[in-house]
Length: 195
Image (cartoon, rainbow, N blue to C red; front, side):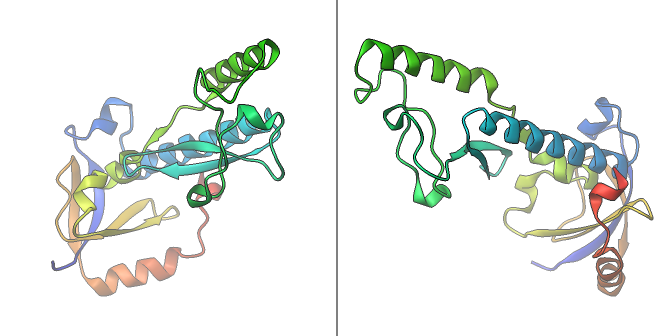
Protein backbone atom coordinates (compact mmCIF):
# COMPACT_ATOMS: atom_id res chain seq x y z
CA UNK A 1 0.00 0.00 0.00
CA UNK A 2 1.35 3.40 -0.97
CA UNK A 3 1.81 5.89 1.85
CA UNK A 4 0.25 9.30 1.40
CA UNK A 5 0.75 12.38 3.56
CA UNK A 6 -1.89 14.77 4.88
CA UNK A 7 -2.16 17.99 6.83
CA UNK A 8 -5.40 17.99 8.83
CA UNK A 9 -6.99 21.43 8.64
CA UNK A 10 -10.40 21.14 10.34
CA UNK A 11 -13.01 18.82 11.83
CA UNK A 12 -16.27 18.45 9.92
CA UNK A 13 -19.72 17.89 11.39
CA UNK A 14 -19.34 14.17 10.57
CA UNK A 15 -16.59 13.82 13.19
CA UNK A 16 -17.91 12.47 16.54
CA UNK A 17 -15.56 14.82 18.39
CA UNK A 18 -17.65 17.79 17.20
CA UNK A 19 -20.51 16.51 19.37
CA UNK A 20 -18.18 16.77 22.37
CA UNK A 21 -17.53 20.44 21.64
CA UNK A 22 -14.20 20.28 19.83
CA UNK A 23 -13.89 22.63 16.86
CA UNK A 24 -10.21 22.29 15.90
CA UNK A 25 -8.25 19.04 15.43
CA UNK A 26 -5.43 20.22 17.71
CA UNK A 27 -7.90 20.99 20.52
CA UNK A 28 -9.43 17.50 20.17
CA UNK A 29 -5.94 15.99 20.40
CA UNK A 30 -5.22 18.03 23.54
CA UNK A 31 -8.53 16.81 24.96
CA UNK A 32 -7.44 13.20 24.40
CA UNK A 33 -4.10 13.88 26.06
CA UNK A 34 -5.79 15.50 29.08
CA UNK A 35 -8.05 12.43 29.38
CA UNK A 36 -5.03 10.14 29.20
CA UNK A 37 -3.15 12.21 31.79
CA UNK A 38 -6.18 12.03 34.12
CA UNK A 39 -6.40 8.26 33.59
CA UNK A 40 -2.73 7.88 34.54
CA UNK A 41 -3.23 9.97 37.70
CA UNK A 42 -6.35 7.98 38.63
CA UNK A 43 -4.53 4.69 37.91
CA UNK A 44 -1.63 5.69 40.19
CA UNK A 45 -4.06 6.55 43.00
CA UNK A 46 -6.03 3.34 42.42
CA UNK A 47 -2.94 1.12 42.59
CA UNK A 48 -1.49 3.04 45.55
CA UNK A 49 -4.45 2.07 47.72
CA UNK A 50 -3.24 -1.53 47.40
CA UNK A 51 0.43 -0.59 47.88
CA UNK A 52 1.18 -1.27 44.20
CA UNK A 53 1.85 0.40 40.83
CA UNK A 54 -0.63 0.29 37.92
CA UNK A 55 -0.02 -1.86 34.84
CA UNK A 56 -1.58 -0.20 31.80
CA UNK A 57 -2.52 -1.99 28.57
CA UNK A 58 -4.39 -1.42 25.36
CA UNK A 59 -6.63 -3.96 23.72
CA UNK A 60 -6.54 -2.10 20.42
CA UNK A 61 -9.67 -0.08 21.02
CA UNK A 62 -9.30 1.07 24.65
CA UNK A 63 -6.51 1.92 27.08
CA UNK A 64 -6.69 1.34 30.81
CA UNK A 65 -5.60 -0.53 33.91
CA UNK A 66 -4.89 -4.23 33.38
CA UNK A 67 -3.83 -4.94 36.92
CA UNK A 68 -1.33 -3.85 39.52
CA UNK A 69 2.31 -4.68 40.16
CA UNK A 70 3.58 -5.36 43.66
CA UNK A 71 7.33 -4.99 44.25
CA UNK A 72 7.08 -7.96 46.63
CA UNK A 73 4.28 -10.38 47.38
CA UNK A 74 0.80 -8.94 47.91
CA UNK A 75 -0.67 -9.36 51.36
CA UNK A 76 -2.55 -11.55 51.89
CA UNK A 77 -1.31 -13.46 48.84
CA UNK A 78 -4.29 -15.87 48.69
CA UNK A 79 -6.59 -12.97 47.72
CA UNK A 80 -4.62 -12.24 44.53
CA UNK A 81 -3.99 -14.25 41.33
CA UNK A 82 -0.40 -15.16 40.55
CA UNK A 83 1.50 -12.41 38.68
CA UNK A 84 1.32 -12.74 34.89
CA UNK A 85 4.82 -12.68 33.32
CA UNK A 86 3.37 -11.79 29.90
CA UNK A 87 1.61 -8.75 31.40
CA UNK A 88 4.57 -7.19 33.23
CA UNK A 89 3.90 -9.35 36.27
CA UNK A 90 0.57 -7.69 36.95
CA UNK A 91 -1.96 -9.22 39.29
CA UNK A 92 -5.62 -8.75 40.18
CA UNK A 93 -7.87 -9.99 42.97
CA UNK A 94 -9.01 -13.58 42.61
CA UNK A 95 -12.44 -14.08 41.11
CA UNK A 96 -15.50 -14.13 43.31
CA UNK A 97 -15.87 -17.46 45.09
CA UNK A 98 -12.25 -18.51 44.57
CA UNK A 99 -11.49 -21.85 46.26
CA UNK A 100 -8.12 -20.62 47.50
CA UNK A 101 -9.85 -18.16 49.85
CA UNK A 102 -10.68 -20.08 53.01
CA UNK A 103 -12.10 -19.04 56.35
CA UNK A 104 -14.79 -16.53 57.25
CA UNK A 105 -12.41 -13.61 57.84
CA UNK A 106 -10.53 -14.19 54.58
CA UNK A 107 -13.78 -14.53 52.62
CA UNK A 108 -14.97 -11.21 54.08
CA UNK A 109 -11.62 -9.57 53.25
CA UNK A 110 -11.90 -11.01 49.74
CA UNK A 111 -15.42 -9.56 49.26
CA UNK A 112 -14.18 -6.17 50.45
CA UNK A 113 -11.16 -6.31 48.14
CA UNK A 114 -13.35 -7.20 45.13
CA UNK A 115 -15.72 -4.34 45.93
CA UNK A 116 -12.87 -1.86 46.38
CA UNK A 117 -11.35 -3.09 43.10
CA UNK A 118 -14.53 -2.82 41.06
CA UNK A 119 -15.66 0.53 42.50
CA UNK A 120 -12.24 2.15 42.24
CA UNK A 121 -11.17 0.89 38.80
CA UNK A 122 -10.52 3.94 36.58
CA UNK A 123 -12.62 4.18 33.42
CA UNK A 124 -10.78 3.11 30.28
CA UNK A 125 -10.28 5.65 27.48
CA UNK A 126 -11.13 5.07 23.85
CA UNK A 127 -8.08 4.75 21.58
CA UNK A 128 -10.08 6.16 18.68
CA UNK A 129 -9.87 9.54 20.43
CA UNK A 130 -6.17 9.53 19.55
CA UNK A 131 -6.87 9.25 15.81
CA UNK A 132 -10.28 10.93 15.41
CA UNK A 133 -8.74 14.44 15.48
CA UNK A 134 -7.03 13.37 12.25
CA UNK A 135 -10.15 11.80 10.74
CA UNK A 136 -9.33 8.14 11.40
CA UNK A 137 -10.44 5.34 13.72
CA UNK A 138 -7.86 2.91 15.01
CA UNK A 139 -9.27 0.12 12.83
CA UNK A 140 -8.70 2.26 9.71
CA UNK A 141 -4.96 1.95 10.27
CA UNK A 142 -4.70 -1.74 11.19
CA UNK A 143 -3.66 -2.98 7.75
CA UNK A 144 -1.83 -0.02 6.23
CA UNK A 145 -0.48 1.51 9.43
CA UNK A 146 -0.18 5.18 10.10
CA UNK A 147 2.08 7.80 11.58
CA UNK A 148 1.12 11.08 13.18
CA UNK A 149 3.11 14.23 13.81
CA UNK A 150 1.45 16.83 16.01
CA UNK A 151 2.70 20.42 15.78
CA UNK A 152 1.42 21.95 19.03
CA UNK A 153 3.11 25.29 18.31
CA UNK A 154 1.68 25.56 14.81
CA UNK A 155 -1.63 24.01 15.78
CA UNK A 156 -1.78 21.29 13.11
CA UNK A 157 -1.84 17.52 12.87
CA UNK A 158 -0.01 15.69 10.07
CA UNK A 159 -0.61 12.08 9.10
CA UNK A 160 1.10 9.47 6.94
CA UNK A 161 -1.32 6.70 5.95
CA UNK A 162 -2.41 4.55 3.03
CA UNK A 163 -5.74 6.33 2.64
CA UNK A 164 -7.06 9.84 3.19
CA UNK A 165 -9.02 10.64 6.35
CA UNK A 166 -12.64 9.48 6.00
CA UNK A 167 -14.08 10.23 9.43
CA UNK A 168 -14.87 13.90 9.52
CA UNK A 169 -11.66 15.80 8.85
CA UNK A 170 -10.75 18.29 6.18
CA UNK A 171 -7.26 17.79 4.83
CA UNK A 172 -4.65 18.88 2.32
CA UNK A 173 -2.30 16.39 0.73
CA UNK A 174 1.39 17.17 1.31
CA UNK A 175 4.65 15.63 0.12
CA UNK A 176 6.71 13.08 2.02
CA UNK A 177 9.46 15.70 2.31
CA UNK A 178 7.06 18.13 4.01
CA UNK A 179 5.96 15.38 6.41
CA UNK A 180 9.58 14.51 7.25
CA UNK A 181 10.41 18.19 7.89
CA UNK A 182 7.41 18.45 10.24
CA UNK A 183 8.46 15.26 12.06
CA UNK A 184 11.92 16.73 12.59
CA UNK A 185 10.54 20.10 13.68
CA UNK A 186 8.14 18.66 16.29
CA UNK A 187 10.33 15.91 17.75
CA UNK A 188 11.35 18.07 20.73
CA UNK A 189 7.85 19.37 21.47
CA UNK A 190 6.40 17.83 24.61
CA UNK A 191 2.60 17.60 24.57
CA UNK A 192 2.35 18.39 28.30
CA UNK A 193 3.88 21.82 27.66
CA UNK A 194 0.88 22.74 25.49
CA UNK A 195 -2.02 21.35 27.53
